[in-house]
Image 1 (spheres, rainbow, N blue to C red):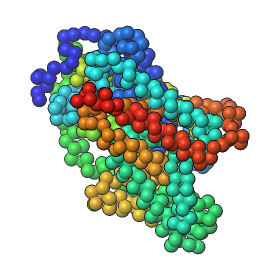
Image 2 (image 1 turned 135 degrees about the vertical axis):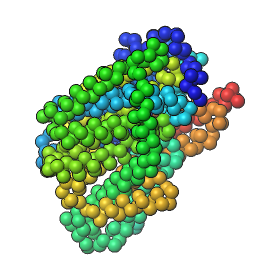
Image 3 (image 1 turned 180 degrees about the vertical axis):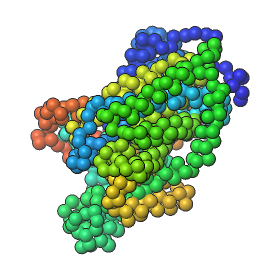
Image 4 (image 1 turned 45 degrees about the vertical axis):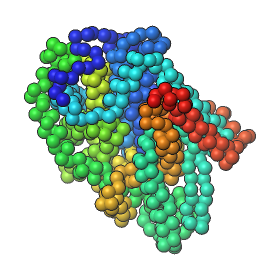
Length: 634
């Protein structure tokens, strides 16, 4: 379809409220909330969820229902600003916890709030700036070529709010938040219900375990049965194949990196110790290789996208068009702003990045922002392989820094800093691409959306550092509560390139396992994530996937789209994340032990099973459409 044939919902000639005080304040609050919730979620399970649709529904509920305002573009601005928080959080949590892990090991000092905030802010601003000149070539010129599935879904949600009251959808999200918050507080606050169901399988030299937390089950529901099954398959391979094989054949052998025999390790600490000492490295090798494979598979698309974007820059008259729906922030602002930020990365001592790091950020930052924007157009923000791009960046950056003589702790910090900035750039550029596409379909003003992205990115960047420090102080990265799987992987990759002191045999087992999955035409990335995560997480994700499979089969084809399951699970993820941050505050100020009732009252396994059944019932209740709605839809 030619662009001049496309007519957005709001014509270019019509001016309606967009960047208002209501949309800005609401959007900033949602950016902070979803940023905090996704930070906690990502540190627990290594995944984040796209906040665009939940933010759109909440924004629509606030602007239309509470404030009695009627502007679809104002609601769109709320989700534009609000969804930026999730992207900034993803980029930060996938990389920067490595700083805290090194500090705990005594390799480096504790990172300061100023350093974390500046690194995050630089990445966030560059992510927005790099995407602005790409809008014309990717969003406009390729309309009808790139499907942008999540952007279209977000636009449909907002359009549905124009035709009928959006209060019911907003209520579902808030109910999900309330239910999840209550369960999280009872399980981890009052501690009267164990959060994990664990069944030892001593004859098989392993165990079965699953968490009962609503957010993790909600992640599985949103990801769907296929991704959940692939992730669980990785868990099955790790816990029911690799761990029993290591225990059975290892015996009295002392294998690096453990310092005691495998038998003593298993007898003393169980299957979890075998996973921690051996299988985790196999999973790391598989995850790193899967990320690189996903990048290699995308190379033809990457080259085409980058070439098209550079070519499109010549015809992009950013900010010069008199037509409202074609106005962008001036290209001069983009160039001057980018230059100043790169100079800050190079010259500010607190960031600890030199000229080599700054050059890597410029080259790879614009390159991967282009790739990320295009990938979101094909597969959506939720499936954007940001972690694969970051792994490749960390590998290349560490190698170049080592060659340039920047080694030791400073070199490792510089490598993770580069990875953090690139990761935030990629995540935010992809999210912004999706938001601009939604705005394109609805008839929003690009320049105002870009200003909104700046606001969401800036306020998210200013708060995420405090959240990271809070969570680390409460539980410590690498703990059971917040294992920080992606950041731990970045740490392992950086250390491996710098020092070579890694169990390379285990890593290569994982690497060639990932290659085998791809040969068999099985997507390696979700399976590798399942190998790398503890079994209780992948099993809980599988429960959510099975619920989605069952509900989708029950619902008719027409009514499935209006099912509240996805909205309810999105609310559950947000609710648990916020209570997780609240409990971290309680732990720091020493209130946690005062509300801990585990010594007086603990329901044990029975309570965990009842809680899990209750969570499943809630999802079924809001996921399965009533018969009357089905008949009306038909």
